Structures are given as C-alpha cells and as structure tokens.
Image 1 (cartoon, rainbow, N blue to C red):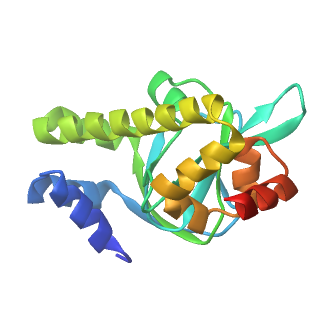
Image 2 (cartoon, one colour):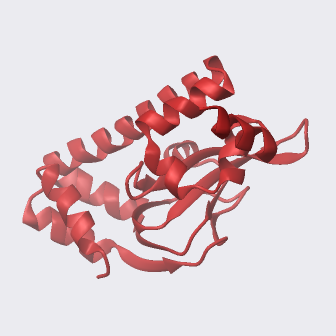
Length: 193
C-alpha cells in the first residue's frame, strides 16, 4: 500500500500489536481521492473514518445567515490525520458538514462497524481508538477557542508558530475563510507579521 509506512509508524507508536495492525489493514480500503472530491456531503450519514496517508482535506459547514459555506477545520498527514464527522459518526444523525479533498490524496477508509468489532475484541485497540478521537476533539476545540478569542492577526501568528503545516499545505482562500476574513485581508495580515 502506498505510504503505508506512515500508518504502521503511527500504529506502532500507539503500541498496537501486529495482530491488530493486520486486522486494521485487512478491513481498510485504500482510496485515491482527487482534489475537490467530496467524501462526505451535507445530509449524508457518516459511517466511516479515514486515515490520511497523503494530501489534505477541509471540513465545511453551511452558514444559513450568510448563505455561504464556511471552512471549519483542516486535516492532513501532519495535522489530525484521522478524518470523520464525529457528530454524525457517533450519533448516527445526518451530517451538517461537508468534507472535501483540497489536493489529490490517498486515504485508508475504515467502516465504523469494522472498527467497533476490532475495538470490542481488543482492549489496547479500544484505548487507542478512544484516545485518537479524544485527542482530535481536544485539538479542534482548542483551535476553535483561540479562533473565537484571538484577533485574526494573533490567531494567524498562532497557526504559523504552532501549526506551520496548515500554513504550508492549506490554500490561503481556505485559511481566510476559516478566519472569517477576505483573501486580501489575509494577504495584508501576512505582510504585517
């Protein structure tokens, strides 16, 4: 599998046994995802988790008041490589979000039922699964808190200093949309830092 080394390193770093790693590989499907492909659309139920081997994705939500899509999160190999809509995935409701590739990407796709079966049979994997989800949610919550409490300039500086991979891999238009500012404002903000 292409870029499987990254998956194996991540699994071993989390103390998963060879048996569990083999089970995960066996239930996964390797997918090549073209840029701009939507892997979860508004109104669908999310029953999958993706592990990003290369490429980048954004999650968007619809702003009813402004009648526009708003970028609400980013995922890539070096930043939250596990990708899903947690609300839809865990509560079995239709998604209010859209997940889209913003570059040609390679992912491992896992179905919820397969992961739950492995989790029920293996305590270490169950811990890993829970830690993975909790870590992702804590990271996203921390970033959203800063997004709501920092000025755009301070928040952009925070990203540059703490998550340079976002600045390097996510197109400016999505970063500007995430910050709630125009591309021009972001360009001026970059020059002032």
